[in-house]
Amino acid sequence: MDRGELKLYGAWASPYVLHVRLALKLKGLDYDYVEENLANKSAALLRLNPVHRKVPVLLHGDRPIAESAAILEYIDETWPRRFPLMPADPRERAAVRFWCHFAADKMIPSLIAILRSADEAQRAAAVGEVRENLELLEDELREGFFRGRRFFGCEKLGFLDIVLGVDAHFLRGVTEVAEVDLGEDFPSFTSWLREFEAQPEVQEVLPPSDTIVDFLRGYRRRILAQA
Image (cartoon, rainbow, N blue to C red; front, side, top):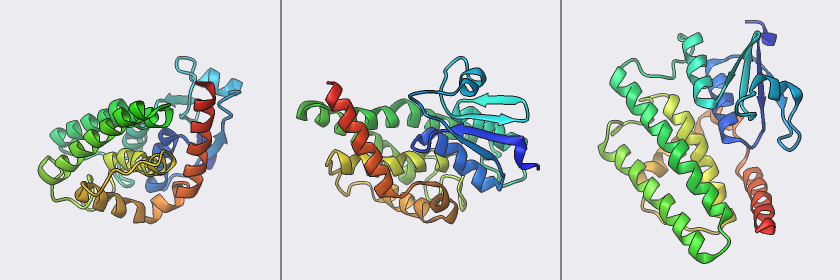
């Protein structure tokens, strides 16, 4: 495939962009990358994603695909034989989509709530929500559809590993910036995350933890200054 066929518009610290970058890495697909200034978005980005006006956007030839979940499915369906991400079983695909929605609807908002918390009461409420979410994931790994697996995708990374793994990488940064201790109550989740972060493709794509911490610390400082 010609490198110029794929172009990704993104922002380096966006978990949603990193979902796509990791999927492309696992698929072994070359692409051009355009780093967007989210405070001054390019005319190209606004033209390619006029509805939401945000990253990521994947341009395949002259066809733009927006929204990270849609992009991941497009990549997997367009190159199905290159490191398949979605399982073949319909019930398992449904479970993957359910937990991906969980990550977008519950996990990410709870992390943002911690960063935006201006007082101890707000922070305690947000931390409580994060702990509840982690308990649900711990239960799923121990007793649910994906129990007994090394990864959600069995013995190799899959669609759900990409989504939850990237988000959990940011969770580490959020807890450090906000000085939150989540305790040691999630052994299955912690073991899975350790395996995820040890994969060479993950290490090539994800920013180092200290870089994420620096970014999140600046984000929190700006948010609190506006409060």
